[in-house]
Image (cartoon, rainbow, N blue to C red; front, side, top):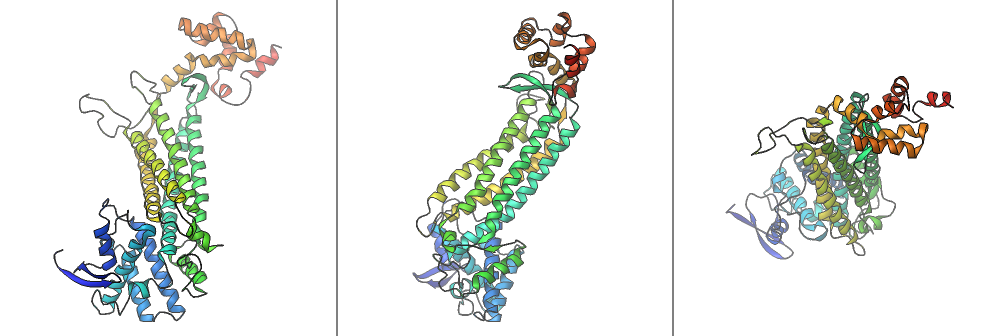
Length: 473
């Protein structure tokens, strides 16, 4: 924009682009913080606007804000909640401590749009003032942490749904692969028999665990410190404001919000946000582990495990024709590593709070919102484009089962650990399978061996061929 209007704040005059809905404080922030080009998450914008709308309506009910003014603020808020005017939230993520710049950006956009709705021109703040009206009974110090809570609840719930979807995809594969017997691997070496479905079922159970932990952490975000104002005292807020604004926000957002037990804790501590970040980190660590396990099982196809095949979604090489890579699993790992890094930043930021305020809230807000978003998106895509299309090589899995030295474990109950170890060493030395050696040594008859090595028998609790053992004394 080349045309400007002149506005004033407590530091003096400031040029503001003529068509802008923001005002002088946001304009100063644009000049002061040309850092990253990153802007607030859309859900964070929505959360701040919900707060401003709730506050205006509560102050109208308390007789502190004229109905015309409150109505104009609420109507302007509805437009933003519908997706309009987001381009005017211009403050960089890396900004003034606590988020004062973003809070004022929000106040100015709402004020200027409300002024227009009342027939005025942008910048005519006598009609609707960013501080006196839009920010009434609020401080950056209680509105920003509340916005972090609201936005993270919304994004965290979406992530929880995504995790549930991936859990269901793995559970479906667990059923599909339940009859496929193979060799487990511990220390990346041959181990006891296992069913492929059991591995997939374990991954499904893991996803349920991380989802439940996330949901438990999200519950802590439902307690609000709105009405603490600057330091927890509630100065300049009506005595009924705290309870009323929490109820109004519950009504507007659909969240079951509650007032805090201690408003000083709410301005000092970011522990609730850290708990969610820790849950994200836990989910990321487990998802990365699972994605790496799938890549291992899919190695090959000619020179690796090749027990499973992932869907081919794109060519794998610019130089090797016909090569297909596990790109969806690779993508998921990258996202997981980013989330783990974000958690580190959130941890340090939580620690960096001093006395009655944590000034690192803008970074906590962005990293928490960003982490929820990219992890949910990655989980959705990974489930749809990878897990649901995984197929298994039944013959190869069976061959690994039959040739694994881990089968020697089955012999423990018949010939003891040391003798079974000798059979295992003979398998490695000769290349013969354990069943071949068992039959050659006449440890078991063919009929009894088949019973002992029945997939269910060797992959469930109990002693394989227990009836044979008891019959043989």
